[in-house]
Length: 281
Image 1 (cartoon, rainbow, N blue to C red):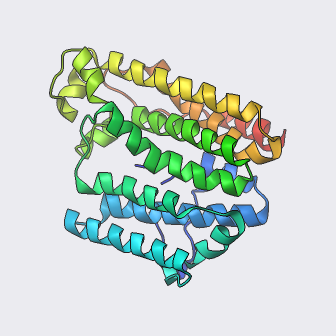
Image 2: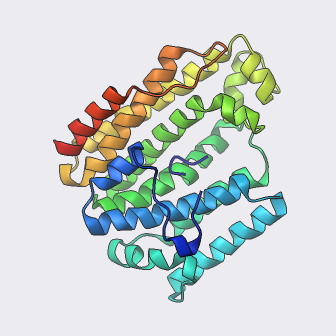
């Protein structure tokens, strides 16, 4: 359930984000060589995300993720297998780090190993770092961000986007037997051993969600603080993603947490205005 998450067969070429999605629009803003590098990273992320969610029995998923780790090691050793060959030029040109690719795989392994149910706040933060902020660290190098500011942006924006995903998808995740809201926040409302079913039916679920939303809002605030201090040419895609995802967070907060919770999607006009503001200005 990564912030950038079903791969295509190798012979069909690299997977591309869905046309019209926030991610697709953001990547289209980039110069050709940076855009193609992001598509290669996106295809990798979708491939390993597919393994975690739809890769069959857990032992097979674990074995396939181990195979991806071996392929990344081979990439950095100079003899990449075919399925990671599209990453050769992005790694060379933009200095992408092996540890960030491995972190993404490790994040997917957390989903593959077991259905995550009410993780501790520390484990949730680790999960967000691996499946979202690690993708951000790869991305900001492609965008051309200065190192220190780029890592800080990835840290906050990855968490902002992933917490938004978690709040938006609580019902869909529960159908898969997953609950990403943190254990400590359930303890505060007296639910000591939450399950997806008991958590979503609890009359004080809104308190848990509002607390997570407040954390997401702070990460958005920190994201924009970094962006404000950074070169505009290197933050255009990040700005669009932050603004578009914030629309999702605002929408779920307006909807509230009482059942039935309809899946929210910002209006097309709002998304268009975000694209115009951050894609042109």
